[in-house]
Image (cartoon, rainbow, N blue to C red; front, side, top):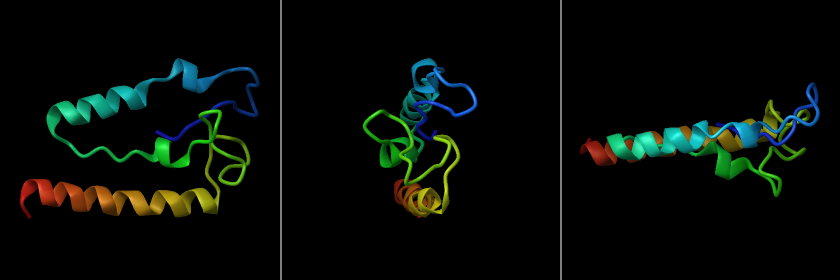
Length: 86
């Protein structure tokens, strides 16, 4: 999941504080032996949100954000293939 600290359409709501889904997904993937692609860590700022260079509204990536995201699926697929022996 992408980081999000605050959202322009609901100021004061802290999605990262109420989320936790990415933690659960990562733990579930580890338990099942699945590869987890961590966009959150690669894209977060000091507030655990999307930096303005990657998103205008703090939620939806702009081209710079997608450029970072583009790198991760291929690495995850490559890792999964190594694990499976292919």
